[in-house]
Image 1 (cartoon, protein in one colour):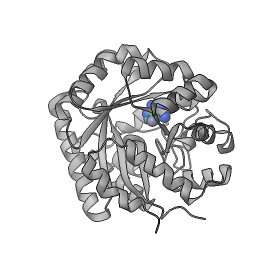
Image 2 (cartoon, rainbow, N blue to C red; image 1 turned 90 degrees about the vertical axis):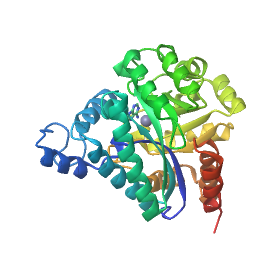
Image 3 (spheres, rainbow, N blue to C red; image 1 turned 180 degrees about the vertical axis):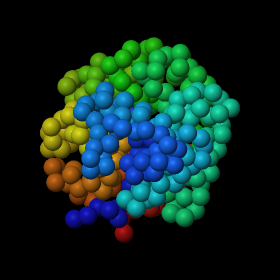
Image 4 (cartoon, protein in one colour; image 1 turned 90 degrees about the horizontal axis):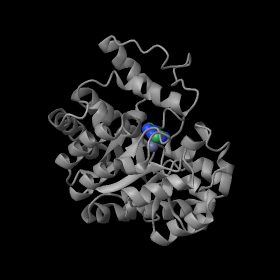
Length: 328
Ligand code: ADE
Ligand code: ZN
């Protein structure tokens, strides 16, 4: 069965990572930027492994210069998400790629992104909120600039702060200052961990950054005590199974730990991460999970209710969206 029309809530989507390859190629042509090495012959993004993925990702962002490019990107990404049945999406926004961490420049990019999101909501009904994200391999000092961008623009629309990038560089504690600044500005917190790092990376992120959600977190499965702890504390995992399979964290969907985590009482949700890079969509994620674990509409509805409860939006927005997840 196709799950395309099932209403979905997505909590983990990198805005630049959701850029369709044709969109990036179009901008490269307009701006005369050489993107050799970024694409395969068939036009898809080309990468060998996670670290190479990060560098190809950063190369592709070179064409996203100026607020207008980000407005167009936001529109394209949200239209595609809405076509996959997504009714609410939280996107990671990176001031590093939007003015390099300068607050005044970031405000201009953010204004363009938010305006495009609001226009798309009027057309397609999809609701977006932003999570400002620092990038771990750019280091703790740059993360402080990004946290300042987040704190200065925190509100009803920028509602969260997070960290992405190369999980094997540095430690979560190196970024505690940035997370403290974001928390004090009223932002809610999430961190990528337990994708490449083992269970200790998840524990460290919870202890040192005091996050309420973990991006991925799936390698927690290697430590039953941690699994129990996640379940008890109600920490929510933003699980991206197709991303994990595409990058080789797990060989196939049916070997992915999402079902075991869910069955152990951990709050799991499903997202796409960087869909065109990983040849996925929210619909494909659901289809693969249905095939691998026999999950049905009711299972996905429960996941979406968990995701909406864990969303970094205000209560009015949540209440407005909840009826859309009711069975028809
Ligand atoms: N940035 C974009 N996608 C990412 C991922 N899967 N892990 C870490 N950083 C990322
Ligand atoms: Zn991610």
